[in-house]
Image (tube, helix red, strand yellow):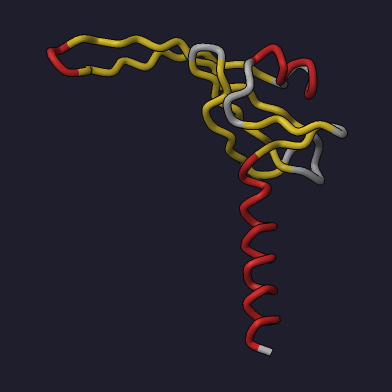
Length: 101
């Protein structure tokens, strides 16, 4: 009985974390590390795009500037708004921002 309970808990944890690994668009999955062109091919054009610059100081005061974009996808009121963050053309973060409209 304890083994079945542990397997059930492990399965539930796996299902919860799977959604954090990627965004499903149709039959394909977008995952961290994908390039912007692949994401556009799979999910289409985003609802909005916001650009930003990230400045980081590395040892010896070297400033590294990265170019980034935050893409927002709106899949309607029955799904979440998805915010994808790209730095230097690669997908680095995926977040949700409430329900779509």
